Image 1 (tube, rainbow, N blue to C red):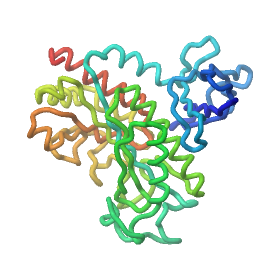
Image 2: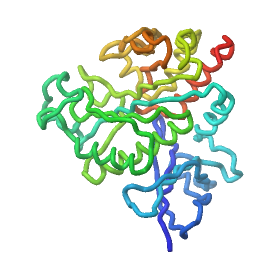
Image 3: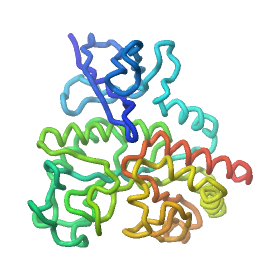
Length: 339
């Protein structure tokens, strides 16, 4: 007896990496082994030395093929089994391990936009729909487009056992969001990549594409982000740690160091309009969706909880954003003795 293992990895496309996948047929009971691929075809190697290695790091049931078939997320290694230069997971693993005692967890809100050809799903031919306003969490065929794909994607994520925690329609026609977490840094990142792959693969069956473009339509339309919610045990127990984390994210060069790694095209989205802060300014505030970092109102009321970094783009690499936030905030909390 055999089963199919879909090996999924992150390529070397710049400025925004893409997902790639291929199928390996394995004998029943066999653990997915190391496998190879042509790195010269994925922007990760030159043709004269193109072999690279896929190292399985996370697997789950394949909800599309069903049965005993699995999805296998892999990190990319060189042939000497060291992390490839495009492997951002390895750096996150080091940081997450260093601060494991602080019990950092994340919830990431992944926004995305469906496209039918060259226009967002729901946009009329040769024109624009009514201005945004009624689409967010809307209902009705005049305002909601792609719900059948969204529901199928949610079912696939749940069947795969992913920690997906919700979905909603967003502020532009054809724009949606799903949330993954709360989970540890590595877990939320691995599972977000699998959820993205399932999004693309599900939409494919409907002849629709899904994009993480941070500004899919120019003009007076909201962009697409990946708001990143974060807490440590100390933050979940006290408000002083919340403030320490917010202040740490704004110290010195940290704001620009983070923003330049929060996804390509971030200056197109973080304009100070459309529920964003400017990309080159840092602010935080309670219940403020125009701030770089929002403290939810109930967190201030309860004097404990989490913060929301609203700056990451929809196309952000989750391994990178969780590493930066964990390193910055946990270092500050450790120095302050708030662990």
